[in-house]
Image (tube, rainbow, N blue to C red; front, side, top):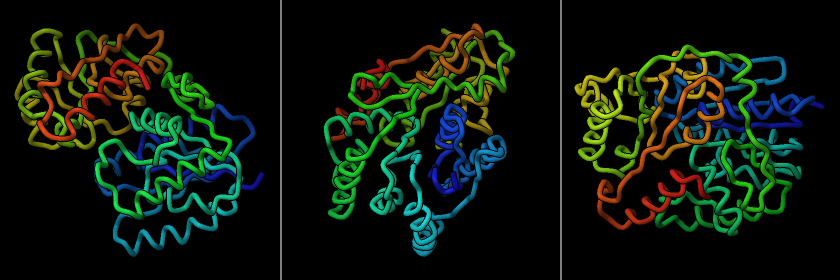
Length: 326
């Protein structure tokens, strides 16, 4: 096999980790892994740390900058087109990505692997099952070009040999699913130190305009009183002002340097890890299995939602994530 037989395109720390987990679970394959760097500095910082963590003889990492400007995006697309056109297998972190959707039509191979990308994986699986355009649930009015590209992406993927490599229970959707057991990560960190108390996985639901900030902070304050919350693990999109408000409740706020699965696998980790609807409700029970750590999900009541036309769709999506339904 040549290095470009398998080409992986990732845009976030979690996608990078899960692409490496897929590679580790797939013997006798090397991959050319391209990081399409995001513009948020917090995501870039985590990505740099994850790149150093996953480097190895079977994965060849290169870093590209498509988001600096429209010119840079064009240059990156021009560099990637021949790589995609030569690949026999594509590993995708984000099939909703405009750049990836633009590149997909030149792919001549038959095998596409989609690795976990947070709760977007649930939306991806649902849209594939229904044959719907590959648009994120919160995109209410896509442009004509965006919609055409999203329709084409679903059509192209439905005509390929598609595999979803995931820790989520998606077997009932008629897709070929291979479970992600996080064996690569668990081999590296089998026995994290476990501390008393609880940790809360931070959420960007306020920053994305889904949940009211006051309701969110009231909920965190309640967890301090009821669950002995001692540590808050910030989401990379959370704003400093909100994190300062969380810290004022007497909670230690940390910005993880690596994907949360890695941070908690290597420890220390609290005996109770709490999360609002999020991917970690699927991934952390696998990563932390056998350690004595309990992972528990928290509901988001409708009364917390920002009023508006998106509220019903947001609540439906959060319920699907919280209760592990696709």
